[in-house]
Length: 184
Image 1: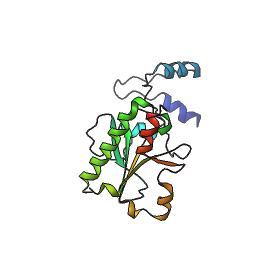
Image 2: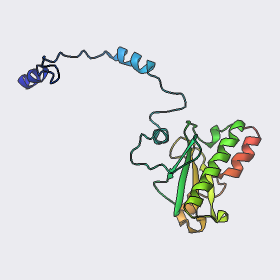
Image 3: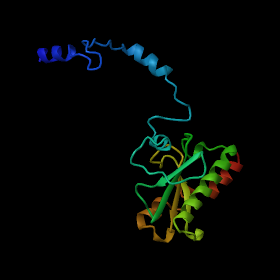
Image 4: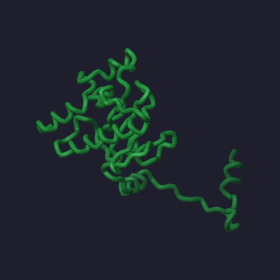
């Protein structure tokens, strides 16, 4: 075992032909200093799956064409309806309770993107659509995301409960607008 470690440490660099020098490993305090200096935008959380999806760092998620540069849209991984999409802001916003009055336009843009995605997928019966947000603590991901589901009349029994209109756990876009105007 010791011979194997020694053999690895004396292997030569294939590019230079010289023996490889042992690289010093930074101490934990040095590593913490480097991590603190590394630039990470305050509107991005590296552990947030939706932040990673928005930056196209999740290979398994296909982004749908979205004409709004501040938003991304993709299919829900556990669809409750034949059309179930998530519209997500690229900027990290925790949840619908974190929205401020000046972000009402963001919510309106999210709705517009949701409608556009449905139209592109040949769904135009907007009376049979549900759009809304889960309310904390009922959010599975702590990053604001609008559920866009259609046709609502095809929701299963459990989905009708999970996405129940204006319940304690799921609120529609109209409620967000009213709350924002009351100065959340």
